[in-house]
Amino acid sequence: MQRSDIPARLDRLPWSRWHWRLVLALGVAWVLDGLEVTIVGSLGGVLERPDTLALSAAQIGWSGSLYVGGAVIGAIVFGRLADRLGRKRLFLVTLLVYMLATVATAFSTGFVSFAACRFATGLGIGGEYAAINSAIDELIPARVRGRVNLAINGSFWIGAALGALLSLFLLDARVLGPETGWRAAFLLGAVMAVAILLVRRHVPESPRWLLAHGHAQEAERVVAGIEAAVHGRAATATSAGALPPPARRATVPSLGEVAHVLLRRYPQRSAVVLALMVSQAFFYNAIFFTYALVLTRFYAVDAARVGMFIFPFAAGNVLGPLLLGPLFDRIGRRRMIAATYALSGVGLALTGVGFLTDVLDATTQTLAWSAVFFMASAAASSAYLTVSEVFPLEMRAIAISIFYAVGTAVGGFAAPALFGVLIETGSRANVFAGYLVGAVLVLAAAVVALRWGVDAERKPLEEVAPPLGLGGREP
Image (cartoon, rainbow, N blue to C red; front, side):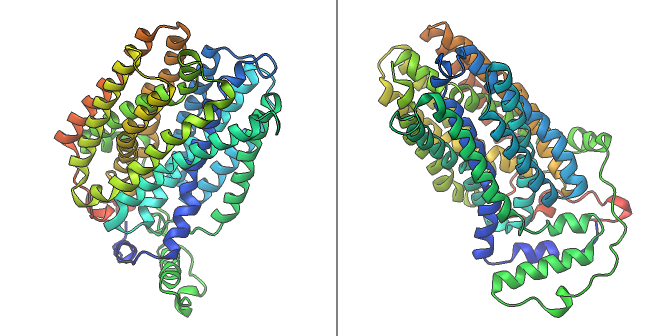
């Protein structure tokens, strides 16, 4: 990679309206994911009705697992392409995939078509994670990278609240009712995707990626344009003029080279990231994909009212990253990651005891979950922050993809199906055992993070993980 002042120029920019627009255009990926997951969660009971899709609890669980499976494959495929073709091309393509798939979901006729559409939707969302996390970290100033990344990841729960609101409104018999309201919910998700697709067209390619791929002049032009937008002035004639032919493009590291970096150069970082991703994926997917079934089966909540219970749940998840995020830049990554993971595990175990002994009702169960996920949301967001900043630029997207895929496949794919089966038994003890598994996993991750975590706070990405220097160029 060429020596350049471009990374330093990006890092020293003051926070501005341009950065807010960037966060809005790219951060909506998590809003869409939250919308998708919550719609299915809120509609879980409705989709069991004979006048909708007549799904069983196990089939709803498997649909959730297939969504996660699609996200795993999408992350790997699109993540590799994001390193090869650029961040911008991919975050436009992945949003288009999501949009088409969620439209198709609205026209499902049974379990097979519904599950297939959920899988395709997951492909788009999984691809979003790799391209978006890479672009955000490479464009946000280092001094606020932690809090911004956590806040963006926490916006999943804005989508969750929106999904719950849509389900309550559309399932109301005075509006559309359960029979057709669930279809309209998916269609509205696609409408939001169209609006965001229009906004994203104006987000520039990552200058860091351009520099690594031999496009120094284009990277200079993009950075000059960003600086002009931030400082409220016109771009200079030099930066806005015609560009010379690009320099020779650096090759993307082979999968063998990627494996060497992950397993030989940074084995401890890889172990930390894997522990964080697996544990948070199981923790979240176990509860969130099936919370509607818990409320309807164990607390006799009407299926059409399940969406009401997501609001306090979502509030805890949004506030956690927002309020705790600045501490990840001040106190440091390692200590805050360990603390949030540990407190999440203890909280889930205690909440599980309350569920097992039947001392909670639907409201207090939801409030207990909200308190737990105040911490867990910051913890899970920090996992994505960690994987996106501790590996070299040339393989950042594929590294995000690999750990997202492995962590989600191990921790997320099994969790919804497992809990769907546990809930269908009708046994509180069986469900409690599942909660304990989630608690133990995040407690173990807390120990790993405290021992081997990386102190990446307020450091430039190039200092946290020096570029590989592809094509004979030194970092």
